Length: 215
Ligand SMILES: CC(C)(COP(=O)(O)OP(=O)(O)OC[C@H]1O[C@@H](n2cnc3c(N)ncnc32)[C@H](O)[C@@H]1OP(=O)(O)O)[C@@H](O)C(=O)NCCC(=O)NCCS
Image (tube, rainbow, N blue to C red):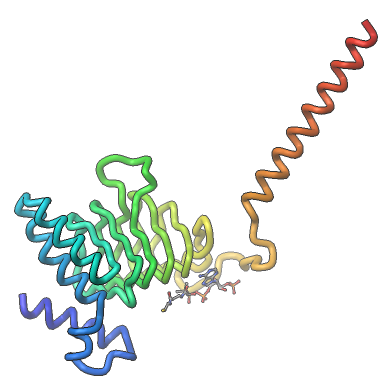
């Protein structure tokens, strides 16, 4: 157990250049507090004491702003930077050496039952504000860009950005150039679709009126 705790502290030094000393890390890193509370809660969850587990998780959320469901499975050297607003669902599985930032949701779409949260591979980075929703896998060494919304499987060694998230880099090679100036706006697309439907219906009504006038 102590080796795991030591490794958790070491992980913070490896990932955060701002970390100065062990005392500071142990007392001021909410990501570390949430992780330790989760390990405790997960132990009760596995002992089939879900209420106790849930209570620990909620107390931890109150103090850290990070909500990890006690059922989530988290690997070694997990690092949550800043942390506020992080939500990790019950059936989420996280590999080793994963880094996530504030505002990340590893959640469900609300459409699935049973396993409904993502499986995150080893050495994955999930940037601030990203949402990964569904029971698919994010492959090893992949990176999810800030504020992306990922709704489908991500192969290993990829960079995914955007809403919905799409692969822009695979094995270090760019896949197409992103058109930052013309990001599709779903609301405008919907409005123009509705406008063309209205135009079509207007035409049909005036055609029917003309036919009736001729009768
Ligand atoms: C995705 C990320 C990890 C970079 O990964 P990378 O593999 O090095 O990717 P690149 O920087 O080469 O970017 C690839 C393309 O995606 C674009 N891109 C990168 N991040 C993006 C994002 N969040 N949203 C939209 N596009 C993004 C880049 O502009 C680039 O586009 P181009 O090919 O047209 O030039 C990084 O951009 C990111 O989001 N970092 C945020 C880290 C974070 O959360 N920090 C918070 C600290 S408090």
